[in-house]
Image 1 (cartoon, helix red, strand yellow):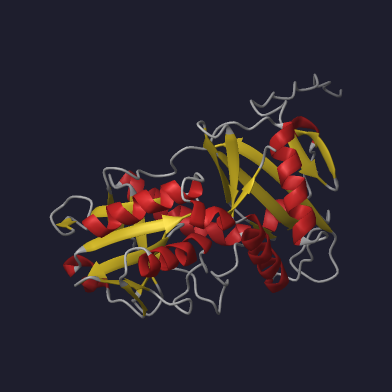
Image 2 (tube, helix red, strand yellow):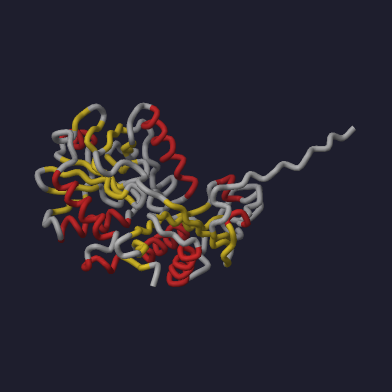
Length: 320
């Protein structure tokens, strides 16, 4: 005797009414359907970007930050994974602007483009596979604390190596590495993890680049230290040199150097500029947000909100 199962009601998402760019057209979130056999869902075969847009209430304007740079990085990530982005960067920026306008985004907003293996096939490979593409947006405030400083631990999980899964590409499956480190930190009472490369040198946070300050010099791991080639990292290097008038050195960093540094901070599109005040039960500097970190943070937030005219080139206005 066969048992008849009642159809299960589909859970309604809080994003159901928002608009998504999905497979070449704008559709409602609830209509962006991915089949259960989608390859990327099972094998992590996709690449994504994280882009921010900042609302300035005084200007009544939403500023999209470094959109073309993010789409250029997405294209590089996709090339590593043998995926092709089906649109030019200019087209992608236009679609993003239309999506933000259609969603009437008037708060700080996160934009997530994703290019992925859409084939409904079992088995791991990257060649000769159908590709899918989507963009969604969602309101987003602080990813981690940016004002009072954060407490970190050195993770027991090592950063994935370029010879295994390239960290310079934002490959969706590789973020299991980040998730393991982040959960370890949170469950041990910390705000964030700092990860070491397989050779024991400092790499980055779970999803952020890293800078330390020693004797008035900013030091950051090089792009060959299994880090994401961060767009925020590059913007901050420019601000440090041009606005703070300080030197930036890219070199390998020993773990113990972090314990003895004057200031330490993490940065990224999500994390923005997040000073670290404690690492592995050791106080960084005097245990407060450092002077250079605070100044850099304030400069950055003024620039991304359109309040520094000389950095308006970073931004694309969404309205008007």
